[in-house]
Every structure is written in structure tokens, then in C-alpha cells.
Image: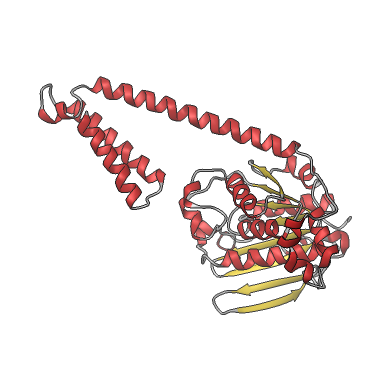
Length: 348
């Protein structure tokens, strides 16, 4: 048995040296366990290899059972914690302060110096309530920059967990936070950067039955979702609650950004895209691939446009669609208008 424990320790040490993710290390330990159990079952009593690995399958079955119970208990505790944190985030009141402390004044000095923002604009950021849909490629830079900018209440809804394949582009997450719910990984990153933000993580999938009630609590929605069905749901709820919606999409090397706001004369998403796209035109990043820096480009534009919308600085993308091609380094602006027959926003 000591021989097996030595092998297990070796796997953990080698994984540490190679900086392998914990998931990979656990998989290797699981394979070692299966191999040892197979030796105990397949080889006859008294065999040297069987004796070196414990001498009896019963011992290893007990070890496996206890380990399974521990892991199941840990997973249950994590689920309970996730639900408790989400409930607490939903209940937590937003404390508003009209004045800035010395730390905040120093933190936001470069904003306050800008004549287009100044103290009045920074105060609007402090009082703003922004909900981000998705804590993935687009949500990552949006959350980081809006948190750093001093948005007073910053919410994010996502039911996914951090995966190794995310880390190529989702810069808000880290290798050490694999398998953590993305909303709580994002909360850690934003709070490390700016403790003055009231961050509200919602670890659940956005559905039609909760969307409107959730949107009512926010002044601006930023959509960073990665599928057409969710975008249509977000658009319908934003129109119903008359909430401005900044939307970004990316695929491979290309991205686009616009501000949907029928209540103020701009079109909604249904005006621009009334028909479902063909399957080859609506692929997610996992299906089509995406260059790692592209979400940073488009997500940063989303964050910039959100700051402009909140502070009333400059000219935003209300009624305009920005198209970006990273492969050719070309950017285009297209004027977009509402459709009188749009089934979603015609009565707004």
C-alpha cells in the first residue's frame, strides 16, 4: 500500500512542478486507483504485485467509497454556498453615498480630470446600476473595466463554471479558479480591483420568467451572451422594461457593438435581425473558434460605451452599429433604424 501512496504523491508533486490544473491531477489519481483495483481483482492471492499494492481489493473499495462520500459532501456544500451567496446578493441593499472619500478621489482622479466626465460624471457612475449578461469572453473585460471605473452596483448573471478552455480569452478568471462558478470568480477579480463596488452575482441561467423582474433593478443592460436564443430573450426583456441594452457579439476574428433602445428612438435587436440565422452563421465560440484578444477589443468597447452612456459623454452607438474585423484591422459604422412592423418594439 505504501508503494501506491508513493505513486500518488509522485503524481501530485509532478503536477505541481508542471503546473498542471487540479482537474488533471485528480484524473491521474483516479486512473491510478482504477489500475490498483484491477490488479487486486485480476491477480491471484500471493502475487507479488498484488501484495505490493495492498493485498486485498476490500481495502481499496473502502478507500474509494470514503473518497466518493467526501467529494459528494464537498460538492453539496459548494451548491449550498452558491445558492446562499446568490440569495444574499439579491437581498443586499445598495448603499448610496453622494460624496467620495480620499481613496475614491485618488482612484478616479483620471476620470474626474476629463472635462467630459468630471465630478458629475463620476457621481453618475457611482449611482449607476449595470447588469452584465454572461461572465465569459465579453463579460470579462466589461466587468473589470466597469468595476474599475466605479460603477456603484454591478450585477452579472451566468450559470457556467470556469473551464481550462476559457482561460485563452476570459481574462477575469484564473487557472486556480477552475470549476468555480464564473460569477463568483468575477466577483473576486472585481473586488480585488475595487472594493467600493456593490457586486451582485447571480449563479443561474437567465430565463424568460425572471428576466423582466431582474432587469427592473438596473439602469443599463450589457449583453455578452454567446448564443442567439439568449440574445433574443435579453432583447425582449429590455424592450419590455424600457431599459437601454448595449449588445456585443463576436465570432472568429469579427465583432460588432450597438445600443438597442427603442424607448429613445433606437431600434431593438429584432428590428435588425428579425429572422433566425442559418446554423453556420450562429455558431458559438466553441464551435467557430475565436482569436483570444478579440473579446478584449469588443468587450472594452462595450465598457467604454457603457461609461459614455452613464456619464452622457460624447456620442454613443444609439442608432449605429459598429463592425470590427480583426483580421483586416478595419472598422465600419452603419446607421440602423427601427422597423415600424417590429413585433417586439412597435408599441414602445
